[in-house]
Length: 226
Image (cartoon, rainbow, N blue to C red; front, top):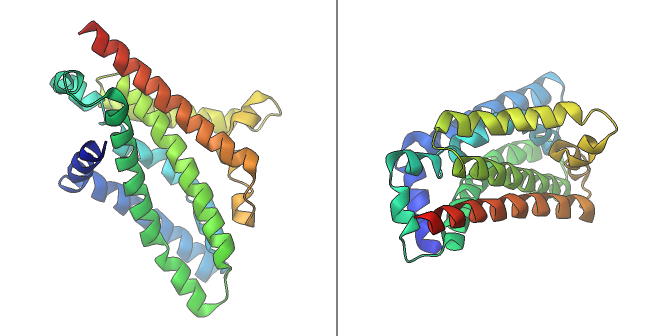
């Protein structure tokens, strides 16, 4: 798994992909930070993350669309299928590599907490809880995007499907039906308040594990056919 993780991290940062993701996210967070701090005089870092969820929805596919779709299109997936490494280690390696990119991005945005701390007294505990929720949300996005990438060789499709899925899930979650319970964004609501709710944590982890497992199943079946 660690060999795959290392290889994937190199692919993110030896190509523009990782820098594009981090750059786009930091640009949006900077705009949100400016709007909250200078226009509305807020000093709460957690609300900066709250308003950055939408851009996360749109740019997470930047790092997930190529995970398996690119290799399938180029035919290099044959190397994965015949690799002595297990499918589980390959999937987890790719998943955690994307998670590291997310962590690096969040670490950079924490500079804004330092700025707020200089001018005011934002709560570090609440900010860290919000970061935890944001990271769990990002993991859910990554797992679904990875699954879609495993079932198509078209990177455009691998990028668009997750965006449409999460936008539709957010739209229908405004009703009081089952979509409200499934909404990943709704599950984030308590974290900016400094509340770590077991239900939401379990919900995010279960969602991620589900699509990691589905990705493993897809690849195992493909390997058995080879």
